[in-house]
Structures are given as C-alpha cells and as structure tokens.
Length: 165
Image (cartoon, rainbow, N blue to C red; front, side):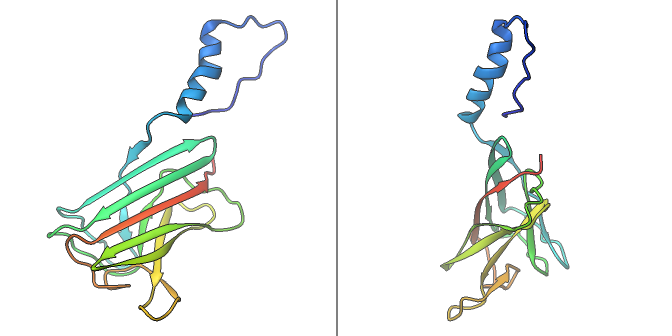
C-alpha cells in the first residue's frame, strides 16, 4: 500500500534499501493485486444472516483514493432481516463535505440499476434502487425493496472514494 514519501535530509547517503522502499515498493503497490475483505452486512432493524450465501469484497487503496467492489450472492439459507441495508467499507471515508456516489446492481429476475451512497466520514455504504419499475425515485435496499430477495439474487457494488487517512 502506498504511503507518504520520505523527507530527505541534506547530505544523507541514499542506499539501495532506501531507494527500494521509497520508489520500487510504492510503485509496485500501485500495480499489486487488490486486497480482499469481507464486508459486514447489516440492516437497520433486524440483521440479515448470510447462511450459505457469499459476500466478498476487494479494494485497491492508492494514497487516499479507494476503489472498492463487493458482491453479495444470496443462498438458500440466507435470511434477509428487516430495514435498510448497509455494507462495511474497507476504509473510513473522508469528510469532504459531500457524499460519494458509486454503482449498485441487483440481479434478481431482472437487473435493477442503482446507486451506492457513501456519506462523509462513513464506515459503511448503502445501495439505493428505484422504488418500482415506473419511477426514478430511489429507496434504500431492503429485504423487499426493490424486489423480494431470494436465493441466487446478487447485489454488485462498486465505488471510488477518498479515505480519511
């Protein structure tokens, strides 16, 4: 992962180890494999239970820029809880004074296109989808919004945001 560059001192002897740390390692981190993580899936009222479903996340952090992707696939023993859903982010969002917007897709019989909203200083994010097939109003995703969730349905979420640190 990239880090703040070194402040060099006049007359300092530059060694191969310092060059590797300051240049090679930072450059390599930009092209490294993404880091996997398991986002925590919560709901406002009653927690969902993943059961035999899968929830996987990956992210790349370059400086304070975070690119994140998470994919939830419902299983036959998944229970959906109650209330609006949230998913943990890999890093706390900065307080930039505005929300970040990413993409969310729900594949459940048909494809629903939505948005992923990351508020300032947030540690989690929520997907929002149209409330029905004839309106563009968005509502936070829940067990029955925008459709009643079932086994094999998928939620795919991707965003780019600024991390707090």
